[in-house]
Structure formats: C-alpha cells, structure tokens
Amino acid sequence: MVTLRIGGYDVKRGLVDQGSGAEIMYPDLYKGLKLKLEDLVSYESPLVGFDAKVVVSMGQIRLPVQVGSEVVEVDFIIVDAYSPYTAIVVRPWLHAMGAVSSTLHLNVKYPSGDKVKEVVRSQSMAPNWMESSASAGEGL
Image 1: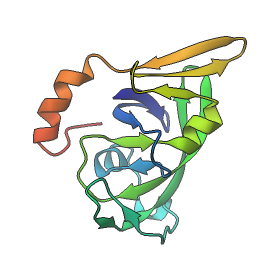
Image 2: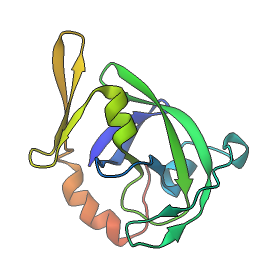
Image 3: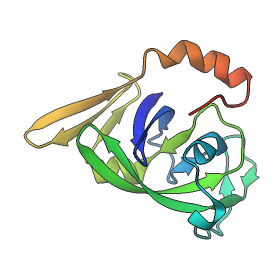
C-alpha cells in the first residue's frame, strides 16, 4: 500500500497493481473527496473484480494523481464494492509515469528530471490494513 495525492488530497491505502488495466476508486475515497454523481461520466463496460464477480460501475472521473513533483491525469472508474484499498492505480498510470513496479522490493521507481525517484510501501499502513480490512472502510 502506498499514499498517493489524488485530486489534491493525500490518500492512504492506495494499491499499485501492474497486472490490472483499469484504475479503480472505491466508495470511501469517492465520499471523502466529496464527489457527486453529476461529477461522473458514464462508464458502461462491466468489470470483473478480484473475486471473479461482475461489478457495475457508478461512472468514471478524471483526477490528477501526484507522486513527488510528477502529476498524471487518471481516469478512475468508481465501483460500489468493498475493498481494503481506497484506490488502485495500474498499467496506464505506470506507463504515463514511465515507472517500473517491483513486487519483490515493494516499490515503484520512476524518472524525474535527471534522477530516478522511488515510491515505497507505506510501512505505517501495514498494521492498519489488517484492522481496516476487518471493518469496511474508515476514512481515506
């Protein structure tokens, strides 16, 4: 889990998933950002969740995701389903950042100017994840 700056807010419990193709936002974050149904555009394609069930989206919204000084616009699909995560960023975000994700090292490296910067797993979030996954969604 990582902390990402989404729509101008620091968002905890973000997941970088190099195996998925759709950026997802869950209800806790949707409500925490004070988004409204009229902020969303229609998204008609069904999605298959981690549990292999079809999930219907509430809609889609484009928001900036910032890591360090790098900002990428991301099209999040809003799904009304439980998740221990608040948002999932995936291959399109990794590609736009020019980033490489390592599950072995639990980090994401990306170019920034003439340096290579790194997003590391939120150490403080690991114990909290176990608590928050038991009770559906606390805060952002």
